Amino acid sequence: MVARQAGPEDADELVRLRAVLLRSMHQPHWSDDWREPARQALLDELATAKTMTAFVVDRPGGDGLAACVLGTIETRLGGPGNPDGRSGYVFSVATDPDMRRRGFSRACMTALLEWFRQQGIHKVDLRASTDGEPLHRSLGFARTTDPAMRLRL
Image (cartoon, rainbow, N blue to C red; front, side, top):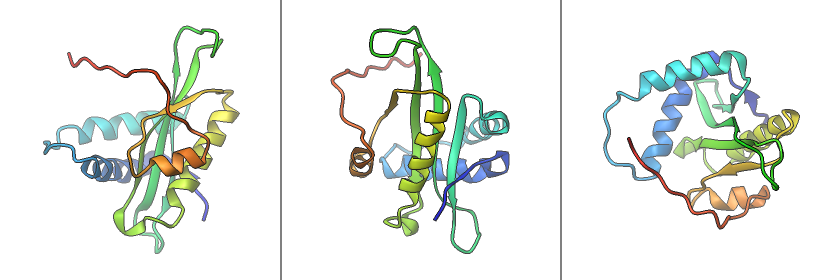
């Protein structure tokens, strides 16, 4: 199977798969008010794929997507471990439950990592779920010692 780069026409399915991911991570019940802004962001970003892109595997039979991964390029002030300050960030690695264990997420991740390489990115971060950690480790990711913190404004 081959992952393909997503286009704006995939925005609805990418939002649907993000909901699959969020539910699998036992997120509390939410309203659907996030879906339209997410869809609009995807329409804008996927049209150019300059700093954000997605790779997908189509569902066998052609009815929607089976799996996806999204990635973005972030720019921060450089430092010793990353002089140009550009980093890749992976998010929304999702596969429909009935499509799991077929290599679809691996195909999407492999394509995204190649895209990052083509963009000159040398450092890629992600937050792995317990289910996703074996895949990410097999691709070379390792846990870091950096503590993550968050403030909601």
